[in-house]
Image (tube, rainbow, N blue to C red):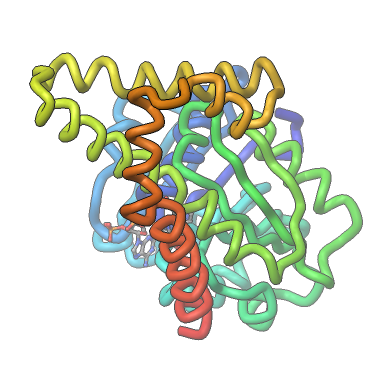
Length: 275
Ligand SMILES: NC(=O)C1=CN([C@@H]2O[C@H](COP(=O)(O)OP(=O)(O)OC[C@H]3O[C@@H](n4cnc5c(N)ncnc54)[C@H](OP(=O)(O)O)[C@@H]3O)[C@@H](O)[C@H]2O)C=CC1
Ligand SMILES: O=C(O)[C@@H]1CCC=N1
């Protein structure tokens, strides 16, 4: 990480922004990280000398204090609270500070309206695997942001996994697939574990085997570059046991269920953005 990002303030270091902060805290050299929360304590930061934490319940000016001379300011609170938070810290921002929203649904124009004109503002949609450097993040840069803002975002997010610029109008759809996606995968893992146990495997065996199977399937897909449909056919002997399972998936509407879920998430993100 270059000298551009020496001090990172993470305001609202909860599940998502805290996952980003954990990744940045693990870098060598690590930036100085200043975390704020409402009242909760991010236990992962205990004992890390380059990470400070102040809850606003203890120090009402914690957000404004954390922003002073910060190179990057991450706004990590819930969508309904983010515009007020941006307004709260607007006057305290260092000139040129990169302001990063992670809020679902909330549009750049709404954030820009409370920040200094020409602020280096970006809207991002990360996912929680950023904590281990395997996230997938999309971002859109505010129209009035300085040239070079895009490169700063790439540099900041490079250690967290994949990152790509996306038209702001597509970020809600990206959120519904990739931002929320880890939850879908964990729901599948939970259901597969239950199914395994109902067929007689022990809970411990299922807990070990199911994630290893999913990791292996994804690694095989990625390392061969083959199409998932092709790899599916490779497993599915005509008239065999996999075909029986895939037939049951069609009968029970697996593809329709996934499409309905992604549609519902996109619609809900748009609603959240409207407040
Ligand atoms: N979870 C995810 O996978 C993803 C979430 N997002 C977005 O991230 C944002 C946060 O979601 P998530 O991390 O899940 O929620 P969390 O509740 O875990 O995080 C919100 C954080 O904000 C803190 N907070 C509340 N009020 C203030 C305040 N006035 N000043 C400073 N901090 C405050 C909370 O502290 P306390 O708990 O003590 O009140 C908490 O640490 C949302 O906008 C969401 O859309 C985006 C992508 C993925
Ligand atoms: O559930 C949410 O609203 C957020 C956005 C994407 C993932 N979590």
